[in-house]
Length: 97
Picture 1 (spheres, one colour):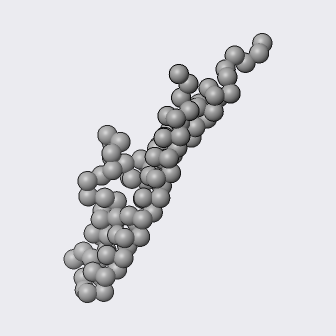
Picture 2: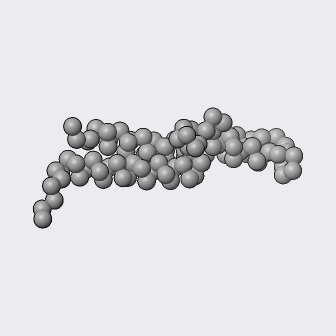
Picture 3: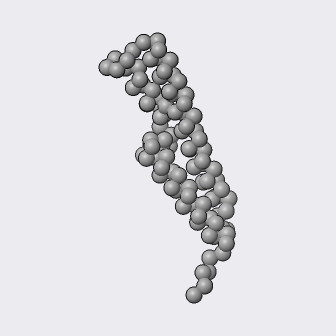
């Protein structure tokens, strides 16, 4: 029995599966909340708040390290959520009519 799906349908399905996988990985890493949105505080802030905390380390150096960590984590989040957004857009563009 021959496969009745067109090449366009197959491409859409592949991109859609890849987009869903990227989304689930981003969500499991905390880049999206339960509703599928970026957390309001941002992942970088959540992680960096633990650096300069009374029960760990407080100082100007801790402030600096927390800010550096926030920027780096936010940049990483942007890359991964950007990959997901690109895959989602590509899948939507390939969706058969």
